[in-house]
Length: 431
Image (cartoon, rainbow, N blue to C red; front, side, top):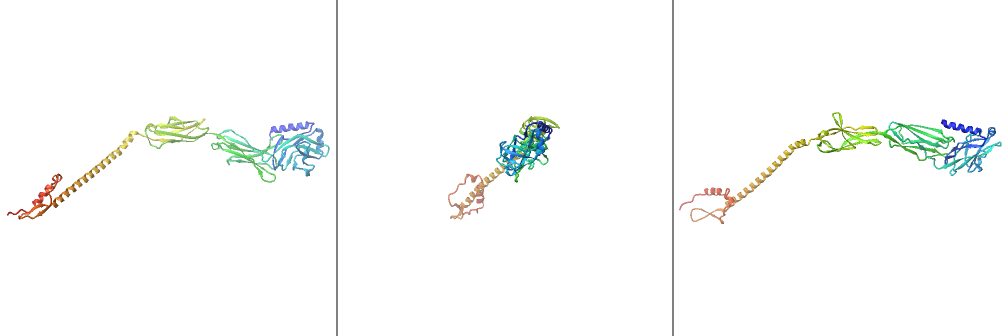
């Protein structure tokens, strides 16, 4: 119990001592889980003149439901008539009427009043009551919110769960937690009316990996007859501020690229809040020369753009540089010079092909002409045959009309062939 609670409790006790009236101190409202136990904190004050009668007498506690004058639902004097089972766990001689109900029945939500009944004349119905709400499920736990944290900060999350009954306390479990996080759970009595609360504290150092990570706190309440009741967990999403990380620069094309081409540079980086400024630099002999800003940069490259390029990602007061990406720009004139030998080879190849085609065509044309000449000669030999005459001379007579040699034959070998044939004939005999 903290210091303010102790002081407030002492003040309340002193008021009771000095008080000359009957008064019960109870929580105004409590929540009970159906079929589970409930511990009701209770204290009372009596006039000073009656305190000795309470100490020196045997007293019993009685609870009524709905009205002060209603019949008892729990009585230490007549336990066989009880509709609710429980025990007075407080010391009535010390004006402590705390009571534990072992199994709070369903559909019993109402206001409850305490009655003190001693064997002597001390018998009194206290008019201060406690409203008890019976729920089928226990209330969900409460989880503290930490807002924005910076990477490296120590984060402290706390999960609170009411403890309806100290004999069957709930258990708190952290979900989606890192094994390296430290956890501490304790039960403390926080309020002046005696209600208990279980608190579990989770402590860890925030990192970029924890951003948008959800941490949940779950609570389980054991039931008197066995089993447990588990309400929905409470969840908190972490918001971690961190500087740029994983900064990377890329080129839109492979190298080398011709001079005058458009080249796109792209820079990527992760940060929370997001990167607000990307700046591009060209590395010139160990010095940085700014080339532009923006997540993407388009350059119409020249020879001077060849070399390493880097980008800087900046978010708030933090920044990170990318690894260099190398750009190689090829000269346009150099490209034409390099292509000249290939062009020359292509021209020579075309010339060779044309020469071969023309040669083949000429050869085929001459061959066809020679074949026609040869056929003409064969016809001439066939048309010439010997013929008998009355004279002793042999005369040559054509079997058919004499063919007139074509111009084509006179232009080539026909006259020569005929002279050769006549020269070989035998001479004519004289008569």
